[in-house]
Image 1 (cartoon, helix red, strand yellow):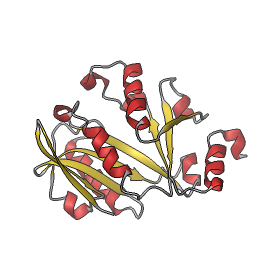
Image 2 (cartoon, helix red, strand yellow):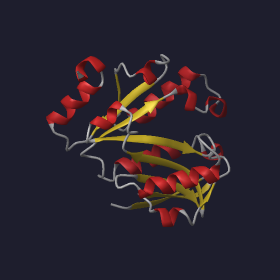
Image 3 (cartoon, one colour):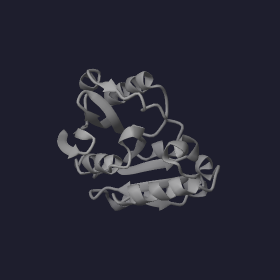
Image 4 (cartoon, one colour):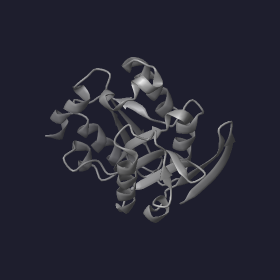
Length: 202
């Protein structure tokens, strides 16, 4: 279900929409500050690629024809333990241009995406690694940034989950968070719990 919502802010009109198709996204510009993961032009190409995945979803927020934020959803990488669960989707990335932060843009973007009803049969995970965080741009240390993420995702039903995943365990500030959709069955939840720890997977 495609959703589009226009909100007036002190920074101008912002259009929140998605999931967008690649051909629509190709017509937009990427804000120069969307460079946390890769340069803006390469990030745009990556977003377009995600829209080609059968399960891939990209939600954006734009000011006129310029994308100033996005959030992506897709299956976990093939080598990941979470890929063993057919109902798991990964929130692959969320980013807002620095000039538009502190205006609840990320929160509204997540609200649009998660109110679409498209992920109620899924467990949506987000793997939070401190090496990906823009702590300098937000003027926070890693623990302050982690607390901000806990609040942001927690508003939408995400809960920190224990795991022995080595990438998560690499640093104590890293976290696995998960949101269980309202239409999941008990077996899906049990399987996810087993995947949280390697010994339970044997």
